[in-house]
Image 1 (cartoon, one colour):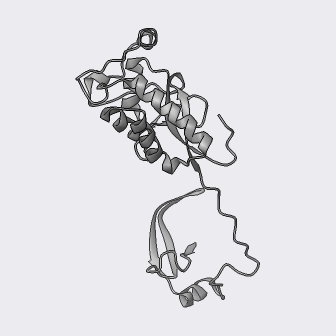
Image 2 (cartoon, rainbow, N blue to C red):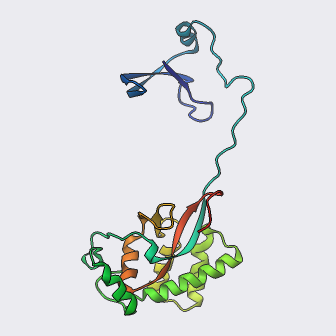
Length: 220
């Protein structure tokens, strides 16, 4: 038997108590729940005695779990998963592994006309991004303020319109490059694999990513 109650203030339009029934049951498992309104009087008749409508005496509210901290950090592209971009042939992630090394030895600094991602100099973009990050960390700039901070830094450094646009994406909380996985090497991408592939094509070695870190997480 499963009877639940939403605490006042959480869902004020929900009934105080609800009875939950299941269409299928197995050892240690239930499936296909259905919710039914049930009154306190019905609960008393159902269980054969009074039922407390609060948490009971002696209840201690637990401490809320710590909130993750947003943090931008520099990372070597070799630590990131192999990207698999879609939609654009010029960003195909199916290049052989040795192509990365060729691009590192002979970096590409000129832009191409095939797409937005290949339009400009990714080396200059990341030099600006990393320099701005270093200065922002020394000044204690928070992650949510980095986009405006880096934009002002880029304008002062004479960045082109395309470079300013790319830097905004690198430091946007919604569009930043986010590798997946808590280990030293990322396993996949939450966001950003098109830009990472363009960087690999240009032979870029380091870039900036956004991490969600918890207070107890070890520093990388």
